[in-house]
Amino acid sequence: MSIQEEIKQIVSSNRVVLFMKGTKQFPQCGFSSRAVQILQAAGCNDFFTVNVLENPEIRQGIKEYADWPTIPQLYVDGEFVGGSDIMMEMYEAGELQPLLQA
Image 1: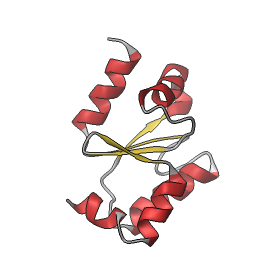
Image 2: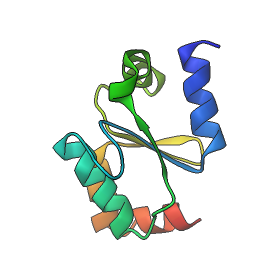
Image 3: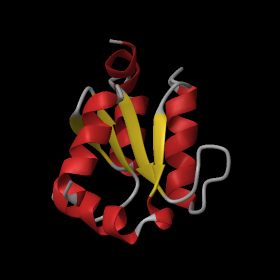
Image 4: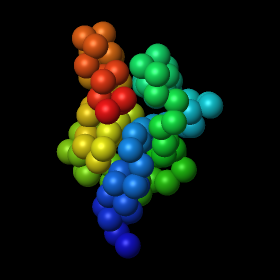
């Protein structure tokens, strides 16, 4: 299985996925920590996380998968949503909460 197929498998088999540096319990960068806090503030606690620091192929592959240069990256229902800045904008506008609850 190629790294792109592996990423697609992860994204399609989990409703809410956050590719991040570190884990939900121990984020290892400020942006990843902020992304976790935004998801929790939006009432989503059952999201799946992938620690890109554990696998350099996934770390690079996820950037190519979404054609998005930074991590963290949020996927909901198999669709790329964005990074922590976009998540914050959507949360503040009230757009993230219904997306996560759908």
